[in-house]
Image 1 (cartoon, rainbow, N blue to C red):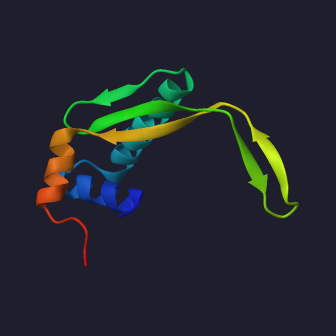
Image 2: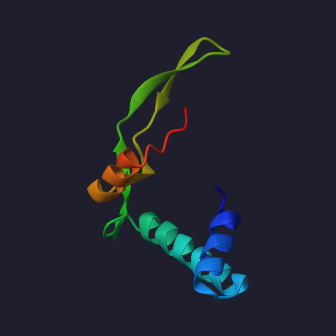
Length: 97
């Protein structure tokens, strides 16, 4: 499912015009990005947390040149689902086989 599919479904369920849903979804995503840029986490009860994870410095390999490359410490965004969310997905047999 893509973002446009989510927007269509929310619009159909709520009866709110798609343009208004697009504005809301984009504003939410932008606020999550801005908050993570400031180094703060975003917690959505019952859904999950958008958090910043610290990656330690390490030595990597440049495969083309065959040399070692120092990768500095850095931060990455991550999502941690809430337990209730994870349990609901497990019970719903979300993975199609």
